[in-house]
Image (cartoon, rainbow over all chains, first blue to last red; front, top):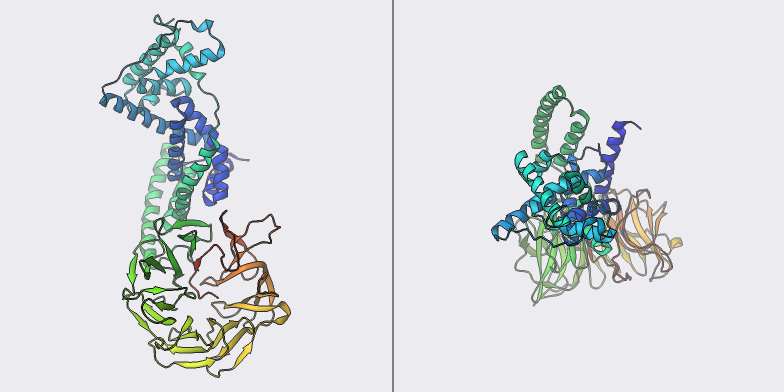
Length: 185
Length: 414
């Protein structure tokens, strides 16, 4: 199978999904766990993950001709989901500013990470992550979880490279402080 | 804790999750209309052009020199396409291609179905009660009755859901119509109506362009089930005492053609009017000579619901041994010879598409079958069978209720 035929096959698969209700349903059921997992891991809300998943697929149908078949359909879908997530973080940031309630809720954690069970540690990671302001969380997400460069993460959230670097630095500091205690160790 | 350790901790958030199955089902239901809309657009000339461009982009988009060449090629292509599009829009075929959209009332909703891919659009807001739906032969317009107060009023609109307007505004009607039929030139609609506050069983012709309506049968006569002659000059109908008559489209020149006749369903180019009678099977009457003869074959049972193909070369009839069915669909020569079975377990036969490509029927498999029935189209050679719409889960089809209340595909229906 040549690369060209692989590309054509992937594109054809998407077109086939859009050409028939039953095929679309099968395609959706096959791909949606990946997209939903991607979003849930990053936004930490099942309700929001569902909403963004829905928006992702609607956008994917609208942008169906942009799929070039060089990646898996799920990779392409997660790329769209990433933009939806960035839009969400930006909107949340704007909303927070409007309400003048931009405050970092720091969680008092007395135990050190080394002393926690696996479950407790995961809970602590979630809680520390959720203390971060939206844009800091977004940049940390895109860099640490998605492997994007700082510049790419900045573009997604509408910030310059230096501003994104600053956001990332503050995100890591905030996470360190919340997860490890006041001293951040 | 250094930056790498922070990142590794954050990476632990990336775990697989399974979405709620109920939400998945609801999400699919919400997305399907969007997918169907995309499907329809891709089938349009503009959509096809976009597909070609996307394919080109995939093949050629690469290095800088390639990009420059591609830009030139795309520019030329766009210019060509724009010209083609502008020329093409002047005689663009209606939605649904050559066959045109199939309009159906099911579960109280008026829907247009593209039989090529079963994509569906809902044409009226939810809760709008419509009946007597018919589609013009050219595939561009549909007519329907809408319930308002004490009676029904006629409206027309384009098959893409635009241009909705009332016609025959002085006419308030009631009762079941046979099937309303469009003239071959898609300008007039003929229907049998009970006039609210007036007489029952009047044949009325509606000029869809002007919206005017005129009765073509006298007040003293009860009639129904009208059809047009192929040249659009005459209308045949059956009176309440089972007399087959014809009248000019302007209401003059009424003539008796045959007695003991059922509803007329087809009128051939060579002057035969096909009709059926529960006791006599399928018959046809030659308009000029008044000669009448049976065309159904008693070996297959009692023939019913004859429908002549639009080109007049084939006759489709359903046969049943008992009146309660089951019914089987046969196709024969126009005189009834060479009949052969095309389909079984036909609940309602809905005739031909206006281009003669498909036969349409409601298929109800036996109760012990694992299959679900629904609305089926197949080609007259028996190939290309497609289940266009399954029965809704709440549907319990019977001889009287097929779950598809009204169907219009541009031809008179049996």
